[in-house]
Length: 86
Image (cartoon, rainbow, N blue to C red):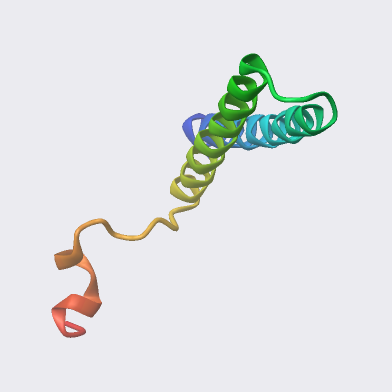
């Protein structure tokens, strides 16, 4: 395995870890909101943490699939299903 693949796999794992940590932070902030009440800062912190979790999670997943060679074809004309199996 080349250095590029190892680096991409490590980056994907880091992104997925960041997404997990952001999800935990988001749940924690929502719990704090439920216990102590809503403020503008808490609302923005929860939304920002949720956004980081979603973006990092999707990016890590796509990068990991790209490294494994399991991404779907984006061009429908290249897919054998749309060419009649030819």
